[in-house]
Length: 269
Image: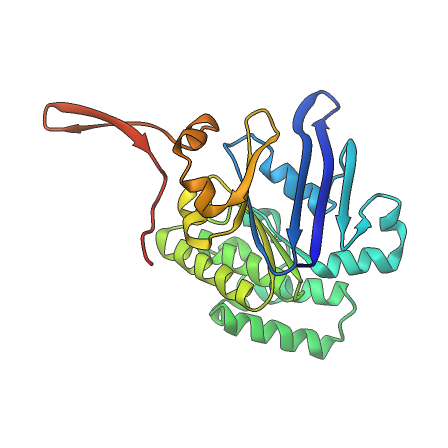
């Protein structure tokens, strides 16, 4: 399979003092669904930001289709355009992404920045609005949308770029169950259409649904294990050791029971 993203010995710290990632090595193939999981604070979002070249590592190498992503390589206009066209980042909080006066303007922004002709950009926007069933929001300002609507618009603003790779930070964060189900089904559909998807989560139910290749970050900011969804989810002792399963206490009448608690919400197969 063709390798599309590779990270080699990546280390990053905030302000040169606060460790965020230590000696990270991973490889993502074209067309793959790849998940980075770990407890909150383990470095998942930081790792996505490094892949997207929003920040650069203190040491190590990030490769996109075999070419290093560095501050110097991004000075090459052609490479920078190729990278930005190829990667779409969907942030955990959609308010970070939405800044234009209307939903239509949000969806037009990226295509116009990529020098797509105006009429072609409008066609992309109309098709994306229809695809995500948000055409009725076209003239609404983003600040007047619900949380789920904002998430759909944030997704739409990335899809109008038609990126090869989707980077998604905590897909289920802040969403109601109906919107969560919509997002899961959308990711599956986009992957079937050939998109490479890299997402972060601490929800094991999402791993169960999407069956990605999984890299598990520890609270020490290193990759503890990489494997298939089945391999990771079947290793209960390991999941406890990385704080993805915890002991749950509940009552039956006057009796108190304790057992390991897995965050599985959905069980549709």
